Length: 267
Length: 232
Image 1 (cartoon, rainbow over the protein chains, first blue to last red):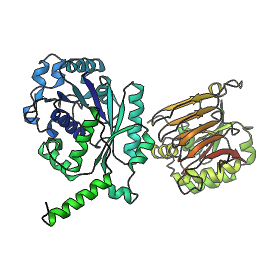
Image 2: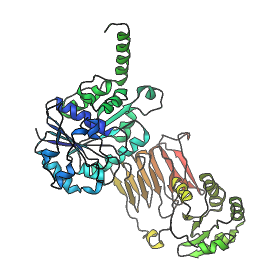
Image 3: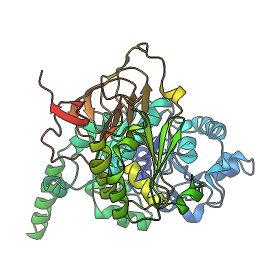
């Protein structure tokens, strides 16, 4: 298969770009694909911590671009999945440390080695985002069902369209069905109505995401929580599988009945 | 902070000063008087003084006066609209005032020079855009603008003529950029927080309005913006 470079972005900070990157990377690697997750957030790196690989980072991709080390010296292999790698960002540099040309050069190097190159973009619309997006073929835009997040996502989608990225697909993250029912949160349909791009996944709000981030163990490694299943479905859709969108409410009900069964010792 | 315009003169002044300028009249409202005094002085400003402009535009120079949004709206409803003053722009060097003006969708800063504003009156033609405008995107055209798509929150359409939006209007639409109130804004579904035609601005629109979320046609009638449900 042709290598695919995908930027994961949002515009707004704190909506779950890094969590999504790490989980999709794991899910794709578990399918047997060679995957690298690139932390493009220079100066504020987090992806290494999310993936539990922070203790193994020696070099970063700035070192590669500056010729301080070779690419395979900077890549950190994840021992939990043979085909999963992390390419960390520099923490002591700023977004200006790389140019778009250098990022394209880096992406070309990675294209030769991997099936999927996932670029975890920094928040914002400035140089950091542009650097992350410039080398990508396609994009996943993350939005939480909140008005500021949707507006920022709209801004980012416009910029990605003008950069010629395609397809640009949407992940609605941290959906809380109880708030949607109460009319306190935008429905997925509302978000799609505004953003008018294809939906590739809905990730429900899930406490296990926080726990996994703190443990450095992406949920997609084996958890069966609602968010873990959502990330796995997104990865399947990325590789072209036709996975229907389960009703989120159904999942909630399943969770409730599962809990009830467990309580009565049925399972 | 930019050097305040007419600062020295205003400090000495306790009265509203009208000064001729290339674009029309500069109305300098000194910041050394209280807000109530300001309204009193504006109220007593003679009709003759205001007619000196002969229909020319006015730049309202608020100097360093802190002005809240309700006060700005009061200024518009008690002074600008009743006296039919054509305000080209508002200037202020108080950051909060500037922010409030911008939040209400009011044009701030020095006015665009006459040469640029008054382009030749030959019909510039309509611009047809078959796509939606996303947040941060902006279209500006001297003639009419027709958009077959949505204008999302954070997007802007500025037209010398009228604006027709086939889809949903959540962003900014400003028809009659040259100051003319003869133009129209039409939206297939209106959800914008403010609208502008010519020098008229309506602000703080919200979902309580009966025509919110419906097809609308907006015009200027008797110096006021009028919104009507569009019935075809």
